[in-house]
Length: 102
Image 1 (tube, helix red, strand yellow):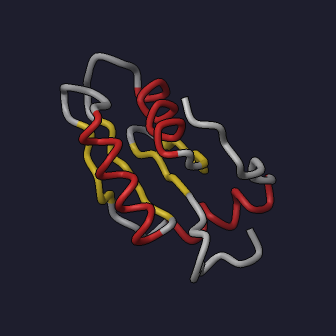
Image 2: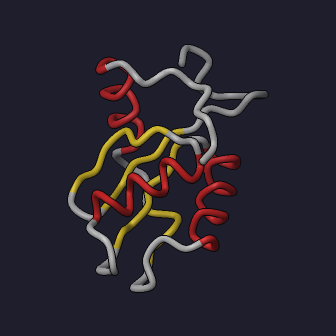
C-alpha cells in the first residue's frame, strides 16, 4: 500500500470540486470484474491528464463504496464525492496544476 502524502480535503475544497465536476462525464468505467490493475492504471492516467475525473462503478464483486475506496487508495487520489454509482476523484499534479489552491 502506498503512503498518501497529500492532506485530506476540507469541506470547502470538496464543495468546490463537486461544483467543478458536475458537468464532467465518466472517463473510466468499472466493469463486472471489479477494480482490477487495469482499472487502477486507467484511472491513474486519467488523473494525470485531467486531475478531476468521474468514474462509473457498475455492478461487480464489491459494493460501490468499496470499489470507489479501492480506486482512491490505489491511485493515491481523494474521493471528493460518491453519488449513486459515480465517483468523483481528485489528484493534484505536482507540476502545472490547474488547482493551485489545493
